[in-house]
Image 1 (cartoon, rainbow, N blue to C red):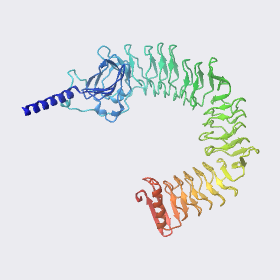
Image 2 (cartoon, helix red, strand yellow):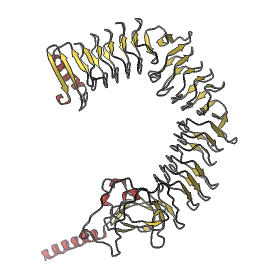
Image 3 (tube, rainbow, N blue to C red):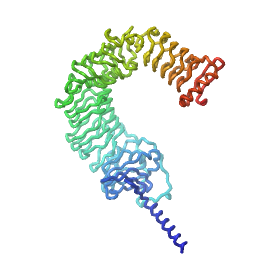
Image 4 (tube, one colour):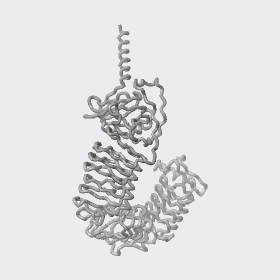
Length: 634
């Protein structure tokens, strides 16, 4: 009797397990899984989050789960490295679905689609064109191998399973696509990266467009949005390199996209519903004119960045926040210069009196400006104010500016002359390091903090060497004997310098002091220097010889990294520590023995376990022989 009960219990357990396997149904929290499809259940709707195809090649998504409508279909990117798991060839979607993620197209590589006028669709028996997925000529980015299977591995549905569809190929040079009149849903990024499509009309029945609808469609020139469309979300037009015209409907209520990367767009009048500009025209290289509507209340610093042809920014008179003066963008009260239209042919610009603030990137891509004068009324300015001003040679700073910080002049500046007023009390380390053409820094004689000597910048008492003018043609420079400290990035990017000498009065040299001095060959450091700062000679490709003083005890990170293979660094016995990547591939001429150097090496390992990278090595030439230090020597 006892054995019979045990057998009955075992039989029941087996039946329960079999039922669980057959039904393949699982519920935990707001997750629900059935037959290889994973759902997420919310208060008023459900979303499909995974289509693994385990249940067969014919997958029909239910319209409701636990009484809640299924409104969205997605494919979790967890399966991006397992494309063969997603085997579904036919996907039946219910008429409750309002959103389909772009991943359904890219991550379900074997799906069959219904076709109409150049488009691929998913749907059901009542409406086979329910959801527009992609134009027919757009290839998937992933390379997916043809799936081979054993019919015995799973139960196939009774319905006939269609053959594996051919992989979509690139289309002709000119391509058209018309959306079926019965289509209810446009998939996310439906037209993204479409080649050959030059124009498209979106019917007004799609009140809310999906995100990234046209993103990256490089041939798209014209988009017509019909009346009825109310919402344009993020990313709809980004990187449409050929886009020239967009027709907006009067019904539009919300616009969150931008035209960043639309390099052919030369002018556009935006709808009045727009309330803010984020990266609206970032990288619009052909943009010449733009209209800002009455409701725009926020414009980011990068909204017009990299627009070298921009000639005029026009603002609605009803806008309470912004105004246009001579085509430039100002705050309504006239106290802030927000954006100078850099495409104008003017070579000289004087910021109007009364302006107190110049915004970040205000002069970005002002390619024709040669000289700019800033009045005394300006007290605030944004970083990279003169970024990409490729012709700018002279800047005069007004007395309202008391410090120069950040990258005021951006990377690759062609600035030749900087006029500093008597009120400047601080010039940030590295602020002028990318002004590779700078020939003269002129300081007002009444400035109590700085002085100019032969165009170079010193502290007022001449004890600190702040900045060498990198554009000078001189090949050698002798640091004056009055100098005891050389500042951060003092000589960086001085490409003409070959030799630098200094007296033993110098006791400190800042980080990046000689960084990227392409022609620099010889430097004899002061006997007073005790620390070789980080990145001091980084990128000095022509460097042949550096002689360290007898008091040096520490060599910091990347001090000689990315220098030439023929560089010799003469190191005294006083060195106690070398940081990781200090030497790159240079040869070290050490005045001590191999045993003494190995003690320095071991001491450095104890202080910094990662002081060498796997590919690092350097040669040490000691008084009693040579040794090569490698990663394996740790």
